[in-house]
Amino acid sequence: MGQKCMTERQEEQHAEGAQAPLDRDHWPVQPESVKVWEDAFHKLHLSLDGQEFVDVRARRAFPLSEKADYVSFLDDKDKEVALLARSHELDKESRRALEKALDRMYYVARIVRVHDIRETMGVAHWKVETDRGYASFEVVEQENIRKLPHDRLIIVDVDGNRFEVEDIEQLDVRSQALIRSET
Image (cartoon, rainbow, N blue to C red; front, side, top):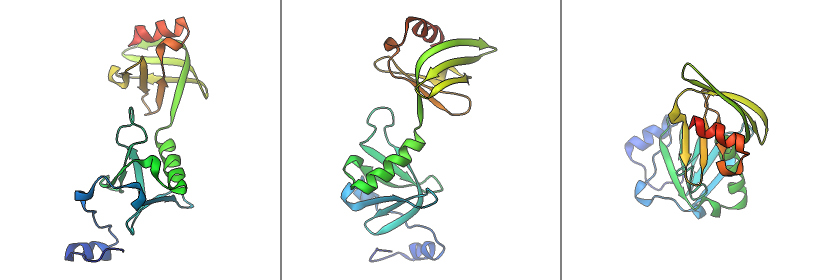
């Protein structure tokens, strides 16, 4: 497993197929000690100083601001197994696998025009044009429309899909008016 000494509990966990916890005193981990790859089933793997973690999920520590700087890796029980600093400094193959996984996780359609927003019984029905085509979606609660600096919005619909307005001021006047009336 790459570790020189295991505690009795770690040996039991290893025998049961569990992955031993890492030493959190050395976090965040540095990119030169990390390898990331995806298997044929699109499961993400992490190797850290010789210890391998299978089927991990990568999450940005600061998804809205510092997208590339810190990435957290979680196991199947949502326990953090590593916090990676400077992910942009990973080797080429690891960076490619990580970016692919993060792109799947943080898929966001960018709204380029708003055709209509109508509210019925507290549910806002949006009809928009995105960078990927026409979309219609529903937003139940106002807190699912997150205002960010520089007139940026992140909208999460009832199905958990994410939509982004990069800059309200860059939209046409009608789209701006519809958004401002809703937010």
